[in-house]
Length: 248
Image (cartoon, rainbow, N blue to C red):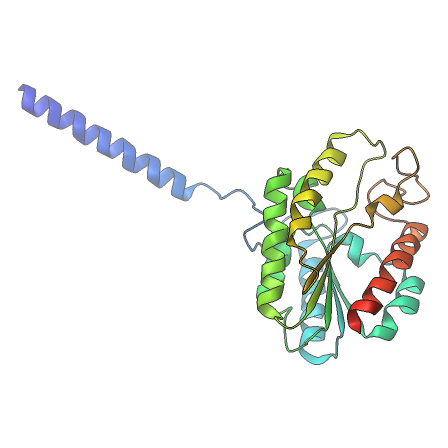
């Protein structure tokens, strides 16, 4: 083989390998991202995909036909409001609950882009999302904050005249010095900058759920993640006056 042909063969092999690598990357599954609208595909033992589909479909109907002045958007912490507390504090305000357990910011983005906007025109949107970006997607605080930012932007796009009450992500894990506590603090520090006190109002109610030593009591969060009825009462007592003020 002449030197020319040898070099040409090596060049062709190099190009072929590069094309194969590009093709392999293109065919590889894209890892979940909190900034990418993503439908629920994971079958949890506590919630099937079909159940998630049904809950989203119910929200779509509400968005299309109901009158909603206060819209709650989020994950299981939003979905799990203790019913007597919800009835007393939020039902009179014509509130709707678009929280679905296990959702990360990507799931919320997908829901908003697939019918959950409808024709409603909420005066106020209450948002609490991001904990599953850390616990489920294993994202960094910076990545989770980017997802929360995308959700806020999507809400502004859908409802440019609505105010947004952006909740800081609640602390989780019992001990105050856990890695997850540190991640949540970093996440909240970033998303706090979204608040402008004009249309976006950032509030951190998380410290009210902690004991003096910074730990979480099982009376407030039995699993150190989801509020108990007592925990929801603490949140409602703190947030309801803010909601009423923002509705004026």
